[in-house]
Length: 73
Ligand code: SF4
Image 1: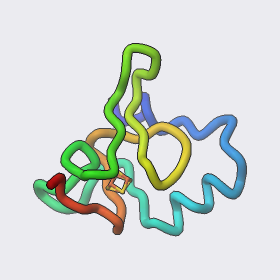
Image 2: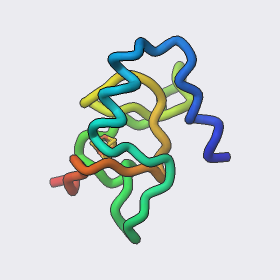
Image 3: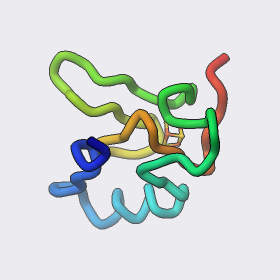
């Protein structure tokens, strides 16, 4: 469920604004480019069910996208 990792409760306004300014979208508009294959993605862990991003705080959907997407090297 895409909403499972879309809850921004507890994040500061600055952090919410930062992800907006990077053009974060819960569902990538580009076929094949998404957080899951971005080099800045932080995969879920045993303690954290959602992924994350090195550029901002809070949950990140594997299927999401932002304008800083960069392919894994
Ligand atoms: Fe996703 Fe953008 Fe972070 Fe890459 S930089 S993991 S595309 S939010």
